[in-house]
Length: 148
Image (cartoon, rainbow, N blue to C red; front, side):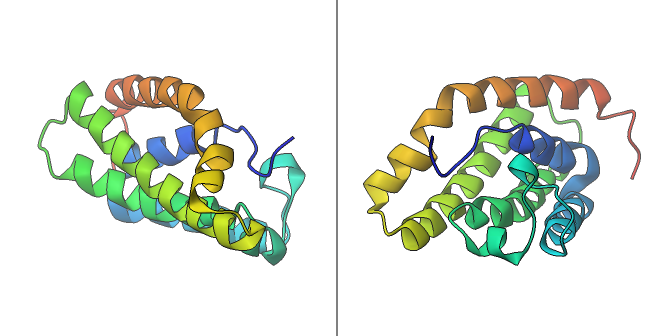
């Protein structure tokens, strides 16, 4: 249908940052990407390999690592982050994912930035808002249960 699939990966990236913090959250996403690169079929649709990382959706995968770090660092910056702060952190993290994802999608698929935005961001906005809300609520509920 389109080069960028609909998945729950951004939900889990957000939870990694919220629950594990910047360093451990980014490390968890790095391990996820590394497992896919070495051949385990962990990417959407059971894909794996370096080709996926270098393909049109590879920027989103790299974005997961950086987004988990940014989300985690923002959450760590507050002693008791509330729902609004978690939400803001997740929005910023999603912007990181979108930025890296659209940049690589544009380059690899030879799309203009507006066309890459139409293919790689716009179809996901409603679902991503729902995932951000779910992630913030789950993160708020579990935050004090996970000790890193």
